[in-house]
Amino acid sequence: MQYDIIIIGAGPAGYVAAIRAGQVGLKTAIIEKENIGGMCLNWGCIPSKAMIESAKLFTRIGTDAAKFGIEGIDKKNITFNYSKAVKRASTIVTRLTKGVEFLLKKNGVEIINGNAQITSPNTVSVENRTLETKNIIIATGSRSPKIAENIENIVADAKQLFIDREIPENIVVVGNDSVAVELAQMFAMVGKKVTVAVTGDKLMPLADDYLSAYLLKLFQKEKIKVIHQVDISSIGENYTNGILKLNDTDIACDLIVNATSREGIIPHFRIEIEIENGFIKTDKNCQSSIPGIFAVGDVNGKSHFAHAGSAQGLFVIDYIKGIKREMDLKKYPLNMYSYPEMAQIGSTESELKEKGTDYKISEFPLSANGKAMTEGMTEGFVRILSENKYGEVLGVQIVAPNATDMIAEAAAYMQLESTVYDIAQTVHAHPTVSEVFMEAGFDGIGAAIHK
Image (tube, rainbow, N blue to C red):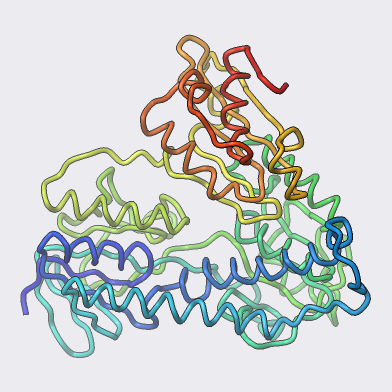
């Protein structure tokens, strides 16, 4: 059968591309070897955020109930039922994955289950069936490489975490990006003793130094131990009977969570395609070294965030349809579902310094925001980096309970090349946490209202 597009992988990059392709009249097939929704919906983004919300509620009930005038709760009797939290997460996953499957079928996308092999620039083989196509989009995602073969029984990745299981007392999370941060905090919030083994010298290496330093202070406050410059290759040989030696420090360890930097899941090829640092190498249009074969999402290594993968999927469909535009990864938010949440977009301060940009910093704290006070969530701020001459917004960083939602406003400002003057003139409803944007805008023009 002849298709306009065959998409391999039904995660956020693949299924979004497929739906869009169907909408614009392209005959489309999507091949998935496991579950519709991919890693994100089934084992990553959605279940992890559901579990984090359970952990946040558990923490707030134990610490804030009395402050809000709620009496009769005995902190000693509050326990966290991991299995019930997992069941709630699974219910959400099932609803979403069924919804995605419905949308694919609604838009005329053929769903094919099985392992795909790219046999030529225009043919894909799946379950002894050869499919012909004009274009191929690879959206197979990524995974964390194994870190210890000899102690697999105590090493778990996301697929092995969010199931009905017992969670032990002492946990070591290996990794330094948002997944490691989120899991470390989640386990700490439900009373586990957590150590984070960082492979480099910085938590969240893509984040602004200001955010990374802030996060480290939060970890210290929450008694999450952080050990830097850990050699991952030595973890297996340094574990003995519940003790993991990290840089000459003995750490009690009952479970190792593998949240290390990910590598692309490369599908089977009978043709040569260029691979770079474990990912499919692509150009500015997400096209691989073979014309007509594209790679979107985690598998191309440009970003490991689901929303970036979806945006790339839409971009490629536009490109195939002849709609030419530029893809600016700096305008894609970087989100951390920490507690409180953190998010950023645009350039970091170190990047601006490296470019020699004349910039200024405008900042406003949540501690001076009325809505944040009423919610009892005053930890955080909004921080705007703008160039001095015209005041154009170059970067935004947010720490707030809903920072991952609030960053969308910053994304709109940057998409429209707005200035701090535009932000100051944007009326925000009162009382809302989003008023911190307006305040930071006024601070940027030297006329802060409540500062």
